[in-house]
Structures are given as structure tokens and as C-alpha cells.
Image (tube, rainbow, N blue to C red; front, side, top):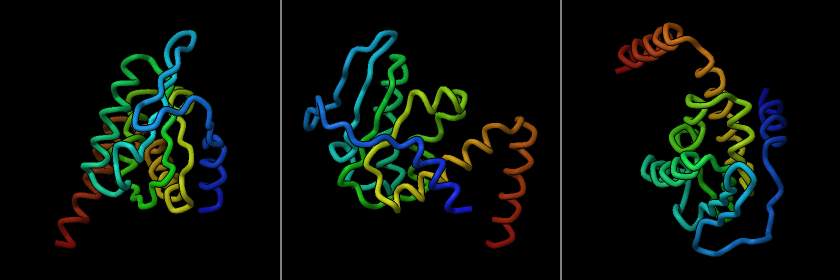
Length: 152
């Protein structure tokens, strides 16, 4: 199962494109029907671990999505990740668009193997969760809430 996640996510990851990279800035190219934005994560966050880092990256992504842009997020030199980071920063947009639109508008590059594992988990869970009806989501959230109360 883990290998299947990696294979699916690996198909979505693009090899690094080294052209037109501007250090310490967000690289923007005009495209027909929108813009192409490259976000170099290392210029905005030190790792993909905290909710604060996720919020910083999410704000940049959100600004680009409002402009109907295609976004590439480059994680070169960012080493530490959690699936929660990806949930909050990136895959949450699966609630606002179809999987096909998400896959065509948001690309991830230069993700470490640990990062790819965390992203794959976040992506697959988000795809499954956001395809549920509101009633099914509520039922799942209740199960998690009840289980959490039992542990506490």
C-alpha cells in the first residue's frame, strides 16, 4: 500500500525546473489564461513541521490561487515534514476544487523521501475525505472525536 502511495504521488511530482528562478522571491511567469507562480519554500519556512509554517505557505498559495495561477512549490533544502503540515498548507485546497483541478494547478517539486511519504498520506486522505458528503464527514468526525474522548 505504501508503495502505491509513492507511485501515485511520484507521478504528480515534477523534476526541478532550474530556469527563471529568482532567489528570495516568488517567481511569476505570465501564461495564457493566468500566471505560473513558483514558490521556493525555503525562502518562507525553515521546515514543514508546524502549523505556523503551514499558515505562512498557505497564505502565499491562496494569493496565487485567487489569481487563477498554476503554482509550483519547490521544497529544495526543506527536510522535516509532517502530514499535518501538508493538510494545513496544501491539500486543504482539495475541499475547494476537484482533484483534477488541484492536480493541474498545484505541483510539488524537490520533496525528500520523508516529505513525499507525508505528502502522499495527506493527499490520499484529503482526496478520500473531501469526496464524502457533509453527512458522511460529520459521522467520521464524530468517530474520531469519540475515540479521542475515550483516550483522554
